[in-house]
Image (cartoon, rainbow, N blue to C red; front, side, top):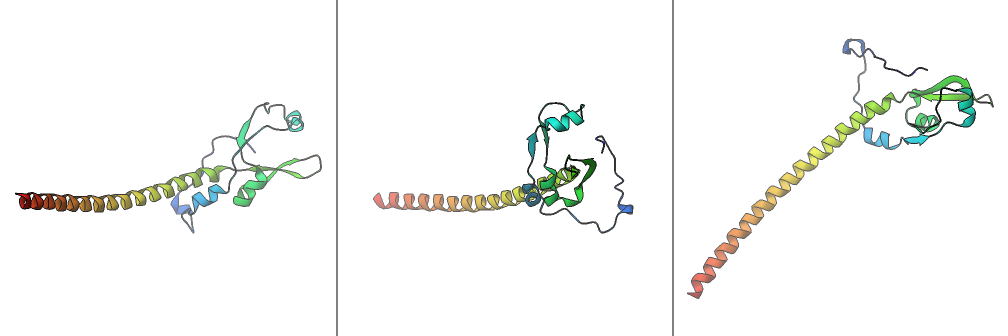
Length: 143
């Protein structure tokens, strides 16, 4: 319920069932990042909330991608339904994993392009040699 800098115990010795984060690009693609303003009613109930645009996600949508990171804030709407809050920390981890995925894709593409470039250089050298040989042959035949 409070924003701030929190540290989490992350020692390998206290963890079990450690799995790598995979398909990060695909999962992040399902998250809609939004800018928004809070409603007048909400700001009346929370005077510290400024009248400006904010950046975040929509809890109901975020729950579809990261269900374990959306919960009730303890506050209620006028109809009695829960106001939802999100822990957007998964976006940090998945963004880092997505960068790693993109890096692997780029490195693979670079290796492929280098191999293709080497093949093209070899073919060009062979063509140059053939053209040079043909030019020498036709020059000798002309004399």
